[in-house]
Image 1: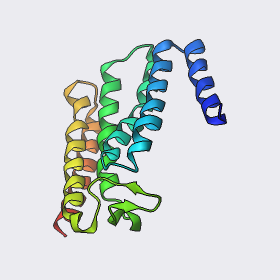
Image 2: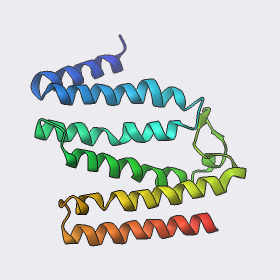
Image 3: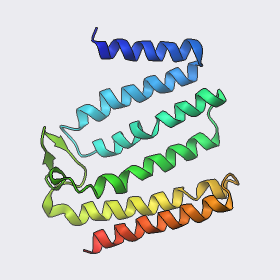
Length: 169
């Protein structure tokens, strides 16, 4: 068994024994999505960006389950914010390899290809709009303060404006 597999098994076992079974299961699911879905998809499909967003947004959810002992609305809200945050960042990535459909190492990125830059910029803009909307869920659910609402709106609107300029230019 590889050192990575041993560490994963040890970490999930630790969570199961000393935290709770739900947190261990969520950690195992996160590892499975990352290792068996996201990683193989990087070489064969641009869908990897969507799957990677799931793997990236899950760790705070199992952190929530470790603290609360169960999944609550707040965990789902946090997942949504972190899930949608990844799209404007990924699609607007200025890395030189991102302009190509397949970047070095054979990794495919969603909406790649220099001829498809409008699609990439549109995905960045749509991701920013989705993030702005989902960042308001805590306010609608009665969990966000006035200061949160102002900051979420200002920062979300700034990201949408940047996405709009990226798409327009």
